Image (cartoon, rainbow, N blue to C red; front, side, top):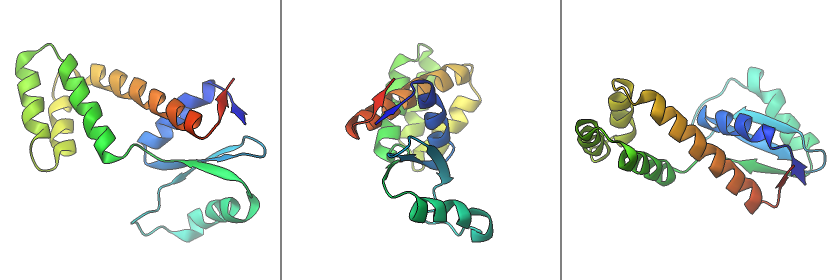
Length: 141
């Protein structure tokens, strides 16, 4: 199975937005659906899309967002690259509190390194998607 390299960015963006990405192994079609685990969805809106995956696609793989441990490591890796020592200390403190993701986000959003974080995170997510595809024997063309 092959997919275009240009599709990797779109897959990574969908994952970061809370979607699961389904790839049809017969025709390479990609469909992103909201991750319904633990939430109550309006099936009038989403039911048709989930039914398509369940009944019309006989063979597909699913790519899911990073696990929380991987996302936490990504934040820690970013902190290592921060040159502003004051911000670095604030970020370290943030990830060592309860709800580290929320505190990290608050610190980043109010800092001058916000765009650097987005670039770092996007690059990491693209790498993650490539690894997931490779692990599922999907080749990028």
